Image 1 (spheres, rainbow, N blue to C red):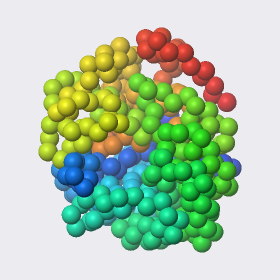
Image 2 (cartoon, rainbow, N blue to C red; image 1 turned 90 degrees about the vertical axis):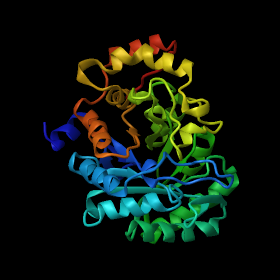
Image 3 (cartoon, one colour; image 1 turned 135 degrees about the horizontal axis):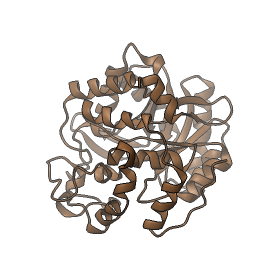
Length: 344
């Protein structure tokens, strides 16, 4: 099966309403390829050391396999992820849909997060920096990276994004948040195209998926593989690599404990659904992506990657497409949950 056939099997998605931006059903998240960076206290915020040449090769391999959507943020690697992604898509810009985020400040020299900035006046300055690092004249999807910004501030930021659309600097915008009330504020804007939110087979997001359905938005799924837990490659033991956020997990990173050891209760959930996810020749990761495609026709999972091999495995999920309805029902039973599986 060639790349074109694989994409056809899983389908494509549209970011936004009528006349929106078409992307492959699978996107790639570019947090990990930003390499090592840290917060002001020296705690790691990246996924460890990377080989930039390997990252570039992985992006280009994903493109060859039919992946057209790449999601990054200005703060990933303190600007480094954008630079690597820009290098990887140079000469192929019209083949890809680029998404990035703003709202955090950072020092590129020390690769340190220095704070956040929700001022509407900062949006344009942040975008100018991203355009330079990505080596492009427009961003296809510009996303607010402050998940808990106040609603009144968010309305001003939404309006600022509308101005950027009018000027042709961005094509559409979104908010990266897990709060449906906040996402609804951005959804009021005519060029809001999506919500980026956490969702995976272990932790569903029915309220956010319902909001996307009601407002004609794409559901961009961060942590679709639960930060690597759903790859099956780290079922036990430590993820204690230097510079890896999973080795010293912040409070929001529930799947791992001290030293990067997966939490037993989450491992038990993975084990409960492993056989279903790996049925039909899928790897565990490919099954987890298939769950998201079956969950809603609006989902665009964005698994992370650092190597060509990871890019090939993730892109290989396209050939399998979504799980079957009976598999979805069995997973809900095994995880003791009940969901309304509306597909209209």
